[in-house]
Length: 175
Image (cartoon, rainbow, N blue to C red; front, side, top):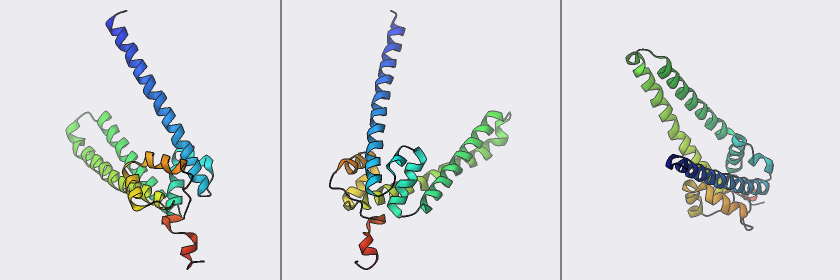
């Protein structure tokens, strides 16, 4: 065996191990989200569907889908601006003509990323708050959402409190 074929074999083994670990982590996260959705009275199967599961997280955290539609519109705008910028780059013969347009589109796409991160962080914070977690836990869920979702999903003492962390009883004057 040559050195090149040994190097390729090692790379395949490393990427295979990373793939197996990634799939395992995704399965564990899906299971924990399934449990959290069940605790909130939402269908657990929605944790499997990629975009719909995030919409469900937003609904659990805030009580409606309004922010989810804003998030999806920003994602769509980001994708459109990025794709158009790439098409301009591919088909432009004279790059000087389209450089300013392409730069403007990329700046707009970058500016759309900022509210996406803000919405994602706030959603993670409020998602943990809706399960009655402390402020410190909620702040940690902004930066380590995957780990915090695992902790909440497999914790037997975690119960759904209500959207925004307000109990359904407290909303109506302490029923």
